[in-house]
Image (cartoon, rainbow, N blue to C red; front, side, top):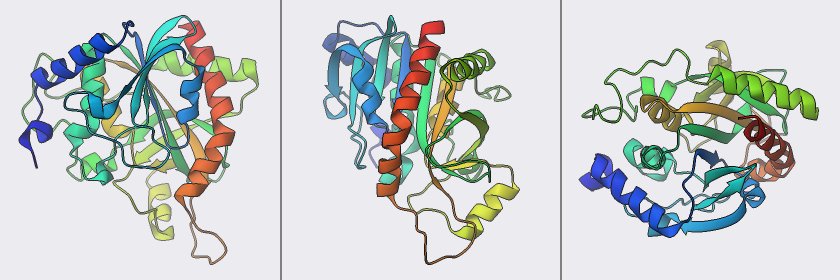
Length: 283
């Protein structure tokens, strides 16, 4: 693997940031990451500049259906925003440093608040496909197994060697999301998100195990990005769109597919767009 990507430095982050600044008139204040099937939320951004990932130095391309693979800079609720229309995943064959490089770049662009979204499988019995779940905490199972994006030399200019993770998801932003959901009558569940490496969906035994250790929803992203964001002191709001219900028993009648995730996204996007716009209006 190319060492430039596996262990990027602040110089690489700055080169990518400089390129983005040269391609857009905007100086973004808020970053937004869109998960599988949720790319359409970027349509709400006004007066946009669009930058393909493949044009940005040291970025890598997204290879997954439902991830457009481009940055969208523009205005949303009177805020300059930078939207990742699709993300990079570890299971695509990239290193954790490649997966999280865009977050480092966002920080150098001056972004201090990150709104991260994903499509997730519902584990908790009360969750239904099409609902939104406010992420109140996460289980970094992939990081516990050794795939933490902070492994390697630490640059103290970016963050501390041992960052605190006791309040990953900003309490004030979470409260704003609750208030907007009530005002807009959007059903908003809350729970703990767990990140696995993927790309295979979980077995019923996997799901029973994940439920037993306290997970409410499961996915293959978000936690590495959030870990790096918190390392740099960014405020984070996390929202999962429950795209399918994870199976706890072997059955021939139900299966989990990526197409199902994309189709449920069409239900999730309007609710998620209203919620995020409402939060931005209050910030």
